[in-house]
Length: 388
Image (tube, rainbow, N blue to C red; front, side, top):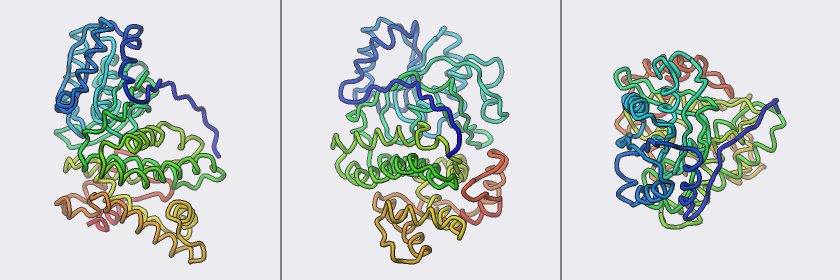
């Protein structure tokens, strides 16, 4: 296990009716709020009404920025920064899923920066300050409600880039499983895949003696495998929604990645897919991650796939290592299919037209890709071709 410093300062209010915590939190933190929302779902399903009720109790004025799209655009971030400066906003409240939260974080950092907020994404500039961000989560997927990461797409160049900083980690997050009831089957399933692949990126590692992190990671994967089909078929099952919601937060709040060398190759490749084709991130991961697994499987990595196959999929130990590994990968892909997620690029009408460009962009954006197995541009093209 590697050295690490662990600090997760986000206050989590989890469960039914926890939106009531907004009143006290905003009273002590905010003088004027920017509320950031998506494309209308939170208003359609009355979540916005609950939020406004608590804001009015806190007697804090607010301005709204709505219309944040999935794979949030830089244009919306610029607009939010402009509003914050014009309206003297001192707190941002994100009400929605990961895209809304990511946009809010980027806005929060951009307000406190004299240059172009895109510098954080493209130039490696690190923010030193940001407006505080709180969240009311409505989708289990990205873990953005409890981490310091944000991913934004620049429309004109079709580049989807990320940056991370502790200054943009939410100060509090409200996680009410009932607020996820209205999520449709497709995005519920995509969220489950996203959670699982977040775990994979930290689990598949050569770091020795990281048993604590790995056993927690396996528990999160088992939760997704148990409850994913339930939330897909029974969207109002509270216990299933609660377990998936909390798994999403724990999968990417640093808990299972601390002290480990992480990979993130599947995400690097998928970001190029969704940047160009604007597909759901979780759907893209359902396509890419099994192909990545097959590609990196070798005598140097097979032991981890065997551990995964035995501990997660209960594959018999008396089979050969390579058989166990391949069966584990096949079962992963089969599970994604059981949630009606696409597992080939053809299913989402993507050809090999931009593979070379995507591979080149991914290498430029990330510098190096993969630690479980270091990937080249050629490797990325091969993984994409295997995903057709």
